[in-house]
Length: 385
Ligand code: MG
Image 1: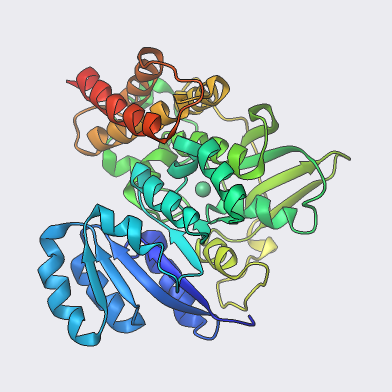
Image 2: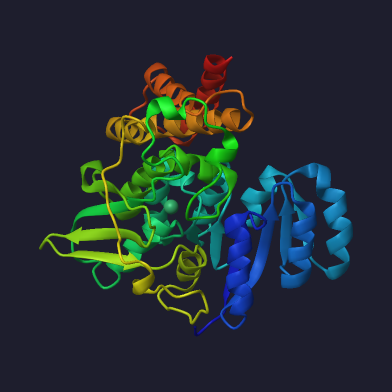
């Protein structure tokens, strides 16, 4: 690449964040780390900062501020703490690209702040577009900011679109692995545990997205994310289960031609492409061998067992603040499932009841999203207790 890109990584100690740093470490000529942020993992944040020498770090949990400061201030690295620091640090002049790898709703505000400051976004936090896709994509257009998808499915579609941006999309086909419970019926899922749900067959990811994958909510969130990223109607987004996770997604154009992007499941590739676009950088990631996969198979998603996918389509069809309700209810449901307080199938019940009980707002402003998120969380907790 011609010029080095200065990257801010929000959520550098998580699964996406650590893989992004692997990519950066292999391409010191292309990238430099400007900002690293972590929620709680002060030790790893300190270790990363010592290695990559960013201009600044943020530890969101203020309890660890003194510890991080003591370790990094002598190295001339600025140290900030708290949620608000996250929203201001993304606006630093020296940043070219912000990789948003925060978990859930917490990604929304810093992403909006970064866009307001004209920073391009590598988006790994799909919830940002689920909650407030209309507002975020409109703001990005106004500011001339590009949003590069990191989610593997959306990266696949984006890669298929290169050279085709002037051609209308007829539909996109998002592939889903089906998760660890593919083929199971409702009565078999009544008593599954979090340990079983956390065992994803193909991908190693953070806990939230792994549970979402097992419940197909992840695919539901990705349908909404795709709608906003690629400017589609929900009727143009289709989901197909593809258990091998080799085809990462497909685009069908108006002449009927379908393009797909393939590769072994490895998040480093979409992370790298989001950071290096429009260039492709040489990598030593393991290569796909067709002879190891004599069959790539496809099936319809079972939305009677995995109701979350149908609920996500419903929220998207209703529009307004309903995807925000869907997301907030799901975040609480996943949290409660991970604490063994509700069963696997009850997660969909919580989401469904919140969708029917929360007030509908047709064209929400930022504050409406904040309130919808807060009130839905309260409602979801009431329903569980
Ligand atoms: Mg994905």
